[in-house]
Length: 460
Image 1: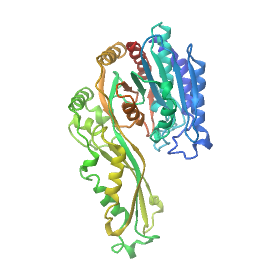
Image 2 (image 1 turned 45 degrees about the vertical axis):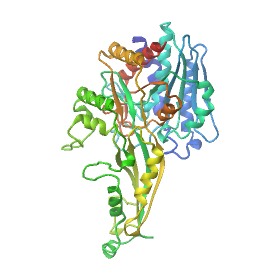
Image 3 (image 1 turned 180 degrees about the vertical axis):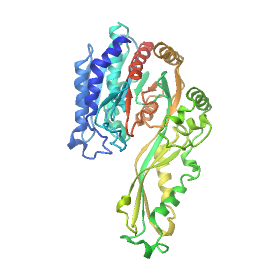
Image 4 (image 1 turned 30 degrees about the vertical axis):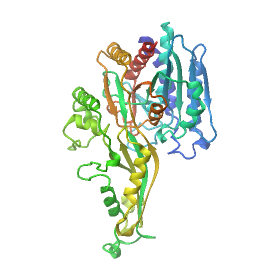
């Protein structure tokens, strides 16, 4: 473990600092990604680092398909039976406002054992952690299976570039017995957490148009319905504004009994941390009093959020004008087993049918990603995860679903139905991926690297 810690300090952290400085926003947020070159900078940085720390017999390549973001693909020959596929990504979410003074998305800062900046925890560390875990096993002269590492650059956009690469690399990937993905969360920083499910997602823009141009609000209000009020009415078709409950059957799926039991176990371990980890304003309360219910709300129940708006001027510039149109960016999280394409069509139909007052209503979705639910855990993997958590953290491992989406997992679940999965990560309390002040908990990440090494060895 000390060698892993030293390797992190000497080789990984300095490179992550350079990586954070690169504004390698995902293609959805940087339409000119190819011209701007930031994704190229990020994948080249990772490729150069891996070449400096290459293992005997290791092959690596930046694979490029026309018009697609690149992937970094690494092949490491094994000394025992078994095949492992390891996964991560290098593309990032956009800047977001609200960073602390002296901090920023592209400004790496280390404070109190945390490396701040966009992408370090979500999940630029993955490629470096993956390769260093294998280095550790080689130094220990322990057997390893055949290992492939796949690092993409389109995950935050829904991984729409990834299926062609999976097809292109299928003969080299082979059939994995175990998939390890370092792109998920942890309930706390005190033990190893395995992810049992990931929610799906539909992202899109809902637009309501009522006029061809803005008019005096005193003249028109009461005659022309506000586009924002019509939006409020349309959103009520999806979720109840009083409870947040999404009622339409197309967006629901049964919660497996074992997931309910895991939610109760996680609630018992985490307690109020489940909701106190979020930066609530004073006096604000969570959506439900029962902690297990909160776990299921964020892992197995559909939830709607409005994440952006257009057509509304800043408050300081808002005159007495009834605006011609309003657009809202919607993010509908789906239960892991709901098919996202069908849900997206259902959402479009629900929002566009019978528009109030005959207003012009459109919902255009840009991302529909199906979630993922893990297959039954093999006894050897459950044992290995439990033992390594005790070894490096001193506590039992925990299993819980996550509210985010990793489209790659759903793709692999369909392609390799017999594979086992260890989906884990460093996104714990206050790490705030996608938001301001995102950080990587360095001590936790170092221990996680050691745990991954143990699990790799266990397959052998």
